[in-house]
Image (cartoon, rainbow, N blue to C red; front, side, top):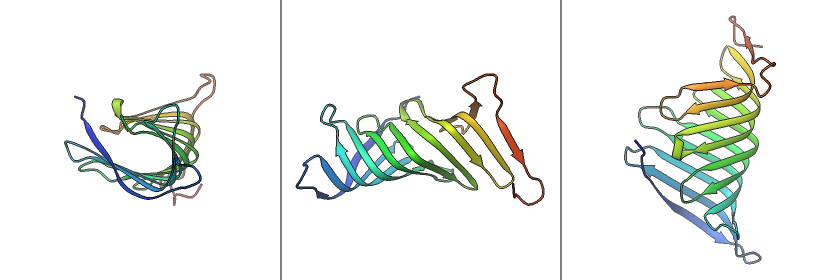
Length: 168
């Protein structure tokens, strides 16, 4: 079942006079009919001249709040946000935090039309007692089921586990 998200700009504090496509302190909020929310904040956003549905964001913090689940936080230097379908492509210095789980990677695509998060390249996943290195991590946003893989099938996913105190 597809769930429709309703989105809007909840706050725009200033539009730059030098370039009318730059928006400062931008905040988007999307909510589906079940009460799940997606909030994305950025220091600046630039409207794409070729496609006005795409906003190029800088210094980004996103929060996914799913009913009966803990929040997921995403931090990135940059993101491309589609204000029609809410899909977001994060890149550069990505950090994901969910309870005691932390993930770093080069690229993260939130595909709300597929209820999917796709993390790619140089993935480092850390929990209290384990650390994982992989190339691709696919997470179903609803079930939280994950699929981990390597680009080169000859390479193996590396998992380090410390059963004593969580130190690696």
